[in-house]
Amino acid sequence: MNAHPITVRSGELVALRLFDISYAIDLAQSESLWAAHVGGAISRTHLSSTPTKAIAFDIPPLRLSLGAATLMLGSLEVVTEISVRLYDFGVAALAVRVAIADVAWNDFVAQFNALDQVIGPNAPVEFWTLLLDRVRSVIAPALDRPALDTRLHEDYLLGVVHTLDQPLNAAELSERVDLFGLLSGETRSLSAASRRDLLARSFSYYADDLVVLTWDRAFIYEPRRDSDVADVIEVANAQLVEFRYYDTLLDDELPSMYDRVEAARHVVSLLASRRFAHLARHLYTLVAEVTQLTEKVDNALQVTEDVYLARVYSAALGLFRVPTLSASVDRKLAIIRDTYAALYAEASSRRSELLEITIVVLIVLEIAVTVILRH
Image 1 (cartoon, rainbow, N blue to C red):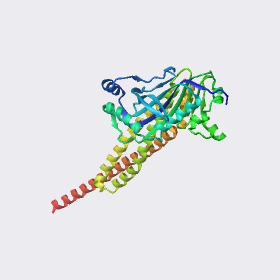
Image 2: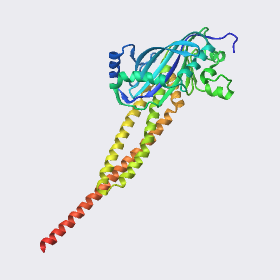
Image 3: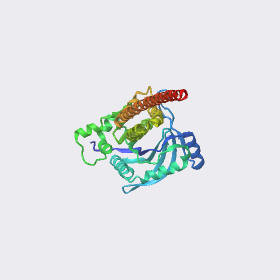
């Protein structure tokens, strides 16, 4: 390390907590409700420096300001800016931002780790749930099938640097400051292998910018104050929350589906076809709804021409296992589709059997009536 310590002239620390709060959110209605009851800053998110044709939101999320609050980071009291971003597929992304000005690098790292301790994944969740309750109390009419359980959530931390006390390119920055303590949260020295792993997903577009992604933290060095990288990282986290929700939903649905199918098979034959048809309709509705929502989640952000942001976005999706979860959801949907098709086939077979029995009974009755009349 250089003998002269680096000072962060400007930047911010960002803590994200993302929740699935409903099946879908009417963003236009949410905007109207918030303006009527709360006011404050309201905006629809558009990537600031990227041409629309290169990368864009399918349906831009809605950002609402929740005002300011104070937090204690160790012995330091800081003022935070709090906001929420609502995605139409049912995710609320709460963000707490701490502005940084003229802070030595080691203090920047210490404050980042302190923020993790105060409102990170291992801290009490009440801080976030109170904020979420504030949001939901206002936009409740805009929520389609609100989630009763908000325990499913994701956390992420962003350490953002805009300017340093001396101009450094990405290579110099990696040599002059200790990124490992910031990215890992560890105070002890890491092994060479661990250091390589932490920097495995590093990206630069210009010589003086740098993005490093890890599972639960990211470092962003962006002198142009471009927020697009942070936005696409948030979208990837929102997609992770939603695919986790549907993966869990289908995990719960499959065993109960098997039980209902088995119960339908033990119903008296005269009623079995109706039971099978009713169950098949339920499964068809489930498949249609989940497929519609997962397609909406998949298309939340459309990347075409911006190769750099596409690389960061794809790396974040891969790191968060979003493609793996998406494939898992698709496999479970395929099982339910096959079951739905088999149920309709069995319902049709039972109806055919019932029709055949009815015809036979009618023939027997006709013969019996004829015999009786002849005598």
